[in-house]
Length: 213
Image (cartoon, rainbow, N blue to C red; front, top):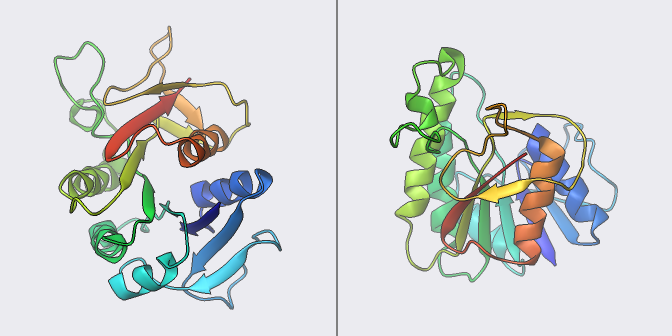
């Protein structure tokens, strides 16, 4: 498949590129500045573009099967996520190209909490509340997207960190996945596995799903 990744040089995006490449897909990485070091595999094609620009997105989507977005704004610039989301949704509308977004966990319902979402939990870390709220806004934009957009939104577990690729995890929909001890976690490597599984075998069209151990 022909897969293009926005945010390919980030922590999650880089692992998505690695997983897609290992599976033999034709991968394109979108960068704003091709002169900057990127550390991507030599087999990856680089294109210059900006997710915030619908015209760039439409141009880059041409001839692709799937666009993956794993962009994350820097702290203090969380508002940029909404702009990028708008650009991606507008740019891909009507192209027939699938759009898979790696989002946030904040909008997932906490098990046994009467519908309270993770970001509403009093114990939610204040330091990451701005990006969590921005991701909630991102998810709502996908839910309200034009019917011509073939989207999927992936929410990670509460704790998403670099780790190992096990290929063993659980999938859910709108509720936070926790283990027997109440922990909610997934490695970035296994998140990439779950995302590529969805790319290859679509099971959540115009829907959200989540992954955790």
